[in-house]
Image (cartoon, rainbow, N blue to C red):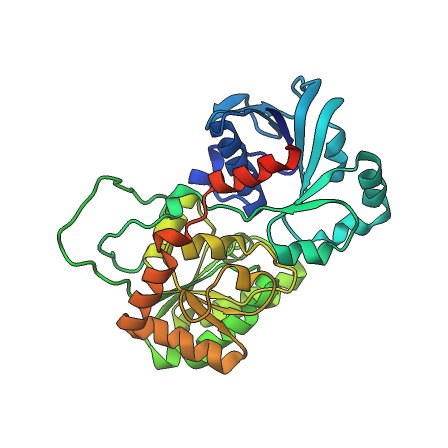
Length: 363
């Protein structure tokens, strides 16, 4: 099949996510392109990449380059306007990576009526939230290889702000595996429940485990810590983060997949407050695949990612959130059990399997 994929968001290509932070939808877009190419399809990606290149068998072309005139399948990421990117095409697919509510506005509704694409969703829950008339298919996203487990001895607290962590793929050790120290990670947007997590950490978790450490991964908060201006709604969260320094809280800008995967493996728990419209739970998918247990609220797509009581805890309230977070930080047996379950081979979801489902869209 001749497949053309379009995205008009930010500059990136098939190699970007390995070494630089990238949004979950953009990472997924690049991973799917490579998986489709490896499945034997001819894949051309048109986006805002800086240079033409080949990545994982897919051809990447800058936005202003000459575009294909025909294709068997066109896959547009997020934006219905991209569905017209190829003149002659047999099948059009709109990949919806987030809240599908935007598809219902007048402009997008007109575009969808005109192009009549099939919709590609990540989960059944997300597809149900759409509620429209277009044909839809659900393809659960995969996880890239850096997040697949590598059992090694744990180093001390991961230096979240280190520019690089060297990974030796061939490194083997006969020594017993060292368990991670009491280190927690949070990756949520500052306005999507971070304040609650920080208050629980300051008031309940850290007082009960004084050597526990929390790293907040946030690009905007990292800029604020460095003295740069941040949007007004973010400023109260920034001040709270600064006030929590005494509770062993630090801020780091997100990193590329290789470093984030290593940080997940060297931590005990992913604190994930969730959000009602967060259907993808991108970082939670990555951390679970890396073997990091989670403590999460039952919001958005959390239940699609966490096996409650096996790979993490889905909790009903603040007290439960703090209690089970402490359990994972302090109880080696509980951590090991959840780590083993989260990183089990049978739970791995690859992009190859997602590509198989996507190919069914035009059969």
